[in-house]
Length: 98
Image 1 (tube, one colour):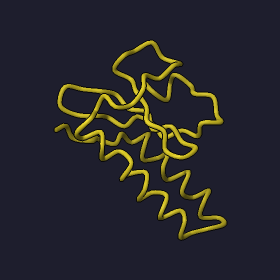
Image 2 (tube, helix red, strand yellow):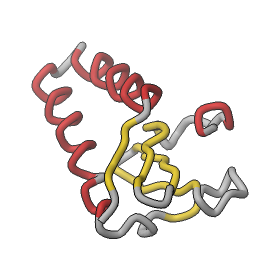
Image 3 (cartoon, helix red, strand yellow):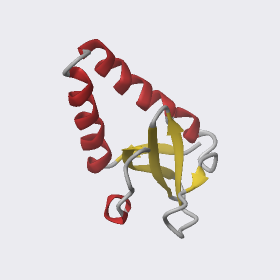
Image 4 (cartoon, one colour):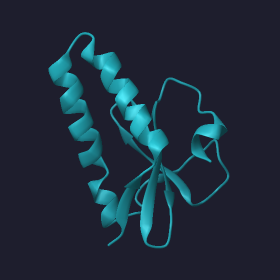
């Protein structure tokens, strides 16, 4: 079993998304954050379960889909690094995943 490590960028992404949601629905913003963290739990046991990110030609960079969001992560030997949480309608910038 590997451990999940959230990068500062990924935590900033979640905070920004929650602030946006909280404008209209504060309770849903809190629920969203909880669910995003829970969505990555399966990576502890199945770290390769996400698909390879099509915009990047790196087999260690993968993603899982959570609603309208892409949770992009990097596989390491003993951990999964969550790199960014990105809305699927937005173009993915390579600097978000390096």
